[in-house]
Image (tube, helix red, strand yellow):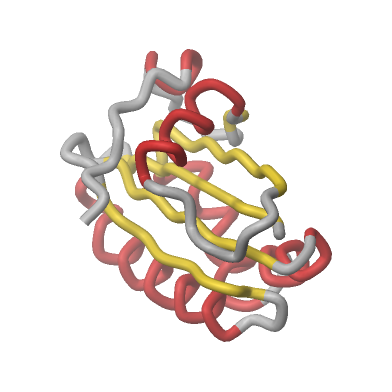
Length: 133
């Protein structure tokens, strides 16, 4: 199984409504995508939006990423976000990692995504943990 964890932070509240619309559509798309086992999302107390998903294989995840609502949202994040990062890893189980593990892996093994207006934390991946509702 392939696990994917992402974190995004909007640089301005003016992007919040369209971001929420795209996020909900992308999460629904992920949950309905062939090869997706489970997916969910949460928000941290500092304005970061986190996702975690488990996929049967990398091909399934790539097919999701390059289609539909997710594909349409990705170019907008360059300007909307001041922090963006992701991490992937393989695991034997089909269960979502705990948010504490997702956070640990993102800040220690993750990689930055391109944004046009990066915050200082974007360069260091020094992000607070999600609340994990």
